[in-house]
Length: 88
Image (cartoon, rainbow, N blue to C red; front, side, top):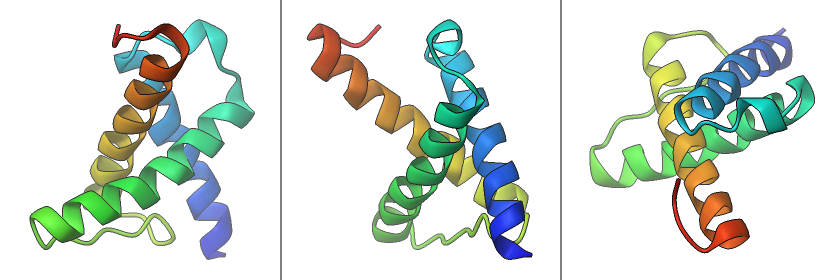
């Protein structure tokens, strides 16, 4: 059951991050899920090493969602840097 919640929360986190980074028109639901799940991993690494906070998207929590959104924003900023040479 945890993987279903991870897919749903990852999709929401990826969608929210794409709205913040103004990339919503270029991404579909599948890419939102991928960005959200990878963002959750990046967010947990950053939050865990910098602040000592851990949040899982396999069991829904607001902390896990926020960490996933922040990680997805970082991931999309890196993608923007690689694609365009600047952050939008």
